[in-house]
Length: 145
Image (cartoon, rainbow, N blue to C red; front, side, top):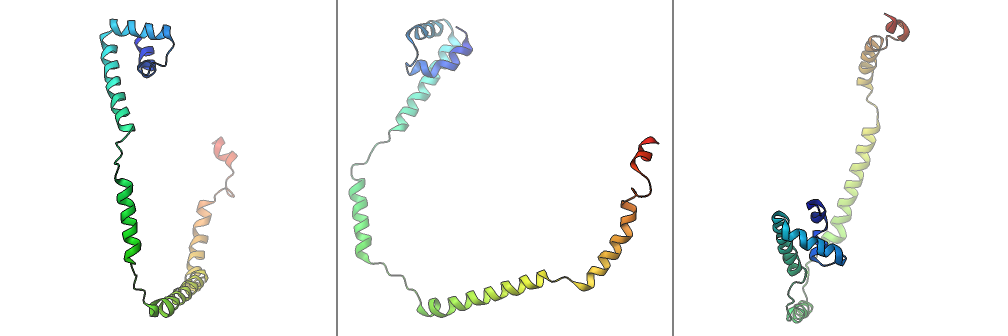
């Protein structure tokens, strides 16, 4: 058996999920090859750590403590001091002001600027003939030269 094959199947070997003949081949290779044996030992250690981390210890008093805290919270009746003036008057007023400001800024953004548009159109028309020389010289003539 090659070392690469063993490395691919080492986890199945450690969990004893391979057929009996492959298990025997793996055991023989591990007894012969020191590098693969060291690799198998490291993998066994890692799998052992993973197995211990899979099942954490359960605290038997967790449920009783949680239940007691929930009962204490429900008995203490925590009150939030909500100011009715803020809730009934200032909150709708603030919302209305923000809504009006948003509509106003949207209208202003949507309107064209008449002073600057003439400058941009003039400068574009000056540049366009230099960018578009296709009318003066066709691509065929350019490629033939």
